[in-house]
Length: 409
Image (cartoon, rainbow, N blue to C red; front, side, top):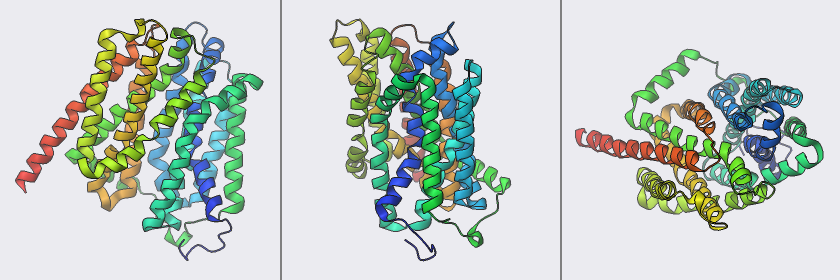
């Protein structure tokens, strides 16, 4: 830790636990909702219960918008102030969601909840950078990410337990408690990590200039486009995976446990990526992952594995879902690194822009696709196949662009 931060009252383990909890706000807010979607759809939109999946993408849309602003706001007004503001917005929106009796009100509440959740998610990264640097920062981030990857494995089971006692309304009460605990914990134990004299004023002109510079760079522009497509695959799967387990395979009750198992297995993708990326490079590894997805989803779609006799059809879908989540671990981090590599002089703003643009656009793509559910897996697998094809084509184009630029130098 740097010597500029006096009165640091918590130990290393407590600090990691706090940051991991703030980091996990996003995953908990999405994955804990999955078991509640059937009940929420039946109550809030009985004429079209499949629209309940929009509750997920509404949150993601709000989070994407918030990602663009929370980093610069914390540079201007301090880390803790922005986290407090985000937590307050998150709690108020969760209370509105708890009281909602129509899907439209719920969706508005979830957008604002996503805006609030962007505060602790984004600013916690800045807090780590304020206090640590170099290899120690990388070590802390690795431990935090390891803890963070466990949340999707257990959140659906936690959500199912909460629903068993308090219905879907209980999920929103859990969100309020979760945010209150993390905000109070931070307030009582963690001092402000960005002194007033080190703060930078919020300048919209500089933010717009950074956006223009990023999208003028071909590799950055293409990587953001492919990252958008990769996130779209993930979001549309999250929208439809629970109805598929429930309505097609009659495994709604055991869904949280299957989802947890898939999340645990696919979480190893980050470790595999760390081992392979030095040898193959970021662009090639993304292309390999997308090419594999094209082959797998193409075979699944062509032979309509939904129609296979049980339990083989279900096993085939679980394998497909695991490979899709595994693919996310091999693509998203690499695509983000490709976008950040030429933008070192505006790294903080570039991180906000990349995350915000790709997340918002992915939510806009996934929302209508998620409404195409027809009682089979074909809309989901077909959408993933199409997105993977476009992403693979863009990665090939990126390779040609980079080769052309290298030859011109």
